[in-house]
Image (cartoon, rainbow, N blue to C red; front, side):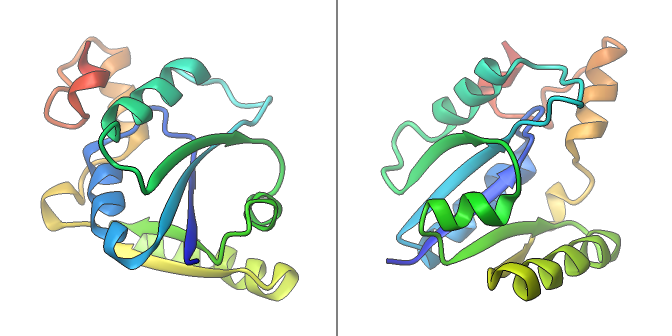
Length: 150
């Protein structure tokens, strides 16, 4: 079984995340959307809300599950018997950042990474931009799935 883990904080999940997951579905038997929990990080949306947003976005997709984890992503992947880590890339800066992590995961943990470029119409979206807009009472409706808008 080809099982991938798509890790992130998903604070919040964006249309860019949805794009990557939907395009990755034909490549894998299962995709685990893994919400990483970092006690030192301050989140805008609660863990329960983030998990609910993701689950609601994939209610009709049996190949997607949502789990939370702490610690190293590669350790979580091994625990879940995943064959690789799925990552979305928006630009060359993302690639440079993700490349070093992927090489470390391969060297230290034998965990491969698969990168998908996001569709051009989503390349400007990031969770940090969404948070900044939301924090300043801006309109995030064109950047996130309907469930986040509520």
